[in-house]
Image (cartoon, rainbow, N blue to C red; front, side, top):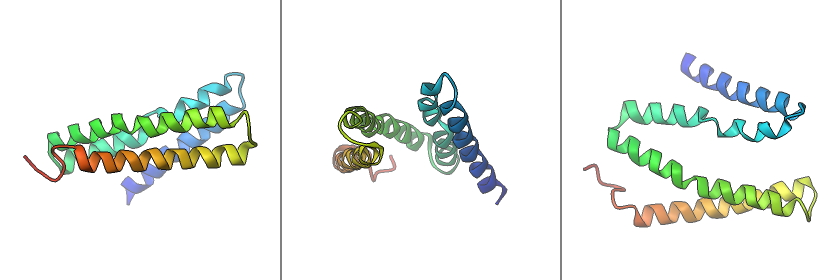
Length: 119
């Protein structure tokens, strides 16, 4: 239970930092905060303690590929922000992220050679 509470505190601290930075002269830095590997550290620790180092490497590799949907989301936000209001921009960018995440998951499960094997 304490572990769950600490994870919640990390998330709350990230949101607080984003809110503070978004009001500063360096508001653009708030876009860097979500990229701090808070949740990746948690995921990697859990995978590293409950599974093999090979599984940790696979998780890290998939994390690298997961940058593709995030990059597509950012490109969509940038592009759509010229044409639509905030709600439409973020909504459509989220759909773009979902599409690319779906493609990534389908491709990963179909083409990743070690998926399902514990060699």
